[in-house]
Length: 272
Image 1 (cartoon, one colour):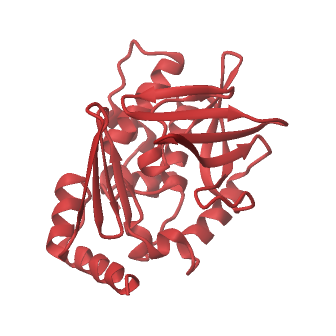
Image 2 (image 1 turned 60 degrees about the vertical axis):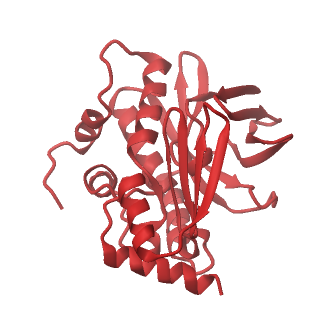
């Protein structure tokens, strides 16, 4: 591990935030820069690496090592940076509802930001569907080119984040404002990256979100979205060499040929 005197300062330097930005505009800039620089990735989970959530280790993996990460890493990093800059923030655990089960466990870490009398959701760790700015906690729709997301306030401080899928709205996750501690996050993080039935233990998921385009590797399929043009294309990843090229060159992960071969074989075994 490299010796970094102040890991949050090192991260903020990478974000290169204009000094003129303040308030929620600065937060939105941080979100968009983070998404374009640092990949969402289950690679370290599949490789069974130690995924400590102390901030030094997170910065070492995501910022310095370019290994990517998932919600418990990305959103703790963002929360820590916002807190360092003086924002009022705390963690929230959400229930992912992609399979439609309302009783899914709380497995997705996000950040609650309180600013100028408003509460916002800040999320830089939901892969391809990650919102590209802070979402105010009231029913409101957001559009980024061809990507449409809305936050719905239900009742009793219950909220849903939904994404437009053709003619329907799919619920990504739901959350409330109940107290969440770092210990709660640690327990959910342990399950998510260690339990044999966890999605990330079994499935390769790597994505990056830019201002106009998004890219996703899911299992052994590559999906490329041009949100400005409203087009998408997909292709099958047929060799370990091809997987290595996509992960390292297209998605910017620091990964070697042997690791890519292990990932490819791992996914091939689960396909049969």
